[in-house]
Image 1 (tube, one colour):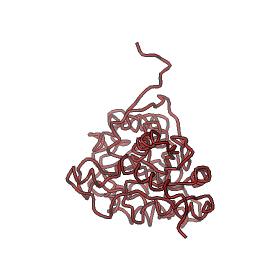
Image 2 (cartoon, helix red, strand yellow; image 1 turned 30 degrees about the vertical axis):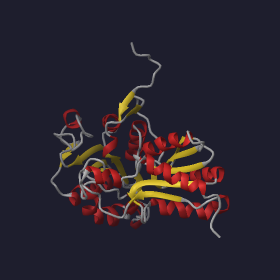
Image 3 (cartoon, one colour; image 1 turned 30 degrees about the horizontal axis):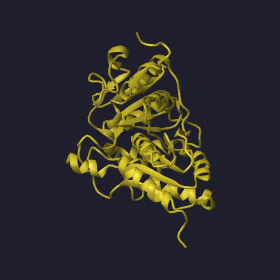
Image 4 (cartoon, helix red, strand yellow; image 1 turned 60 degrees about the vertical axis):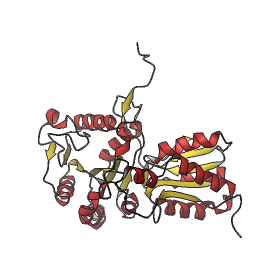
Length: 336
């Protein structure tokens, strides 16, 4: 017999699907659209069962045209609906970047704030499935650079559900990025409909010696690295940003002022990644508290390889994160 006091566990993918079912039941203005979203429930099953339950007008199969999908979402949102439009892979965002960056992101500004655009764009990012260079990228830094967009990347089933609900309820465009390698991960997730505020980071593991700032799948790898480091006497604090734009810089700065060391971890290419922005924010707001330069861990400046062996070497893991943290902690003073 299962102890009723134990929290219910759900997969990451199941949490996304449950959030969609529950918020569509709550709000008749919410509908979903995308390639294979209807009859097949989406390429990875995120939208499973929605068309059977809510019909073809609220779970819409679209042509293979990313620009048309985003254009449909923008038009519907301006008209008062709350569309959730899906792009199969994060890489395909580039096909619709004009619609996203020059229309969705700017529309409210161009109309002097007199309209709203409650549009949620869901997509699937990240490497780890040997999907090769055109289906494995992490392009969140590019999206965060566009004013007017909110960018969300959940790391757990609980956050996947709560942040998706908040994204759909938001009156401005949100890019909601699921990580393909997290779909089968299980974790506690409440059954009732709940939301998590956008723009609020979470301290996943408190610590005193070094701050690890990360998001998405790298949260789990950072937690594994923290466990390795704990056995060596290094007490790491792990911060899950959850929302990348707007970013909860205050939580990061408060942590760095406590630990005096920081390492930023992301799966995306290291050069010009979010680690660079976070490092700049820290040095502007907490330079005098740093005992060493901020470390950055990311992928090499290369397309994502198809080969499983090369891909495993390409994506940061617990070992590489632990090595980076050791290097940051051992540098006890800034260079002259």
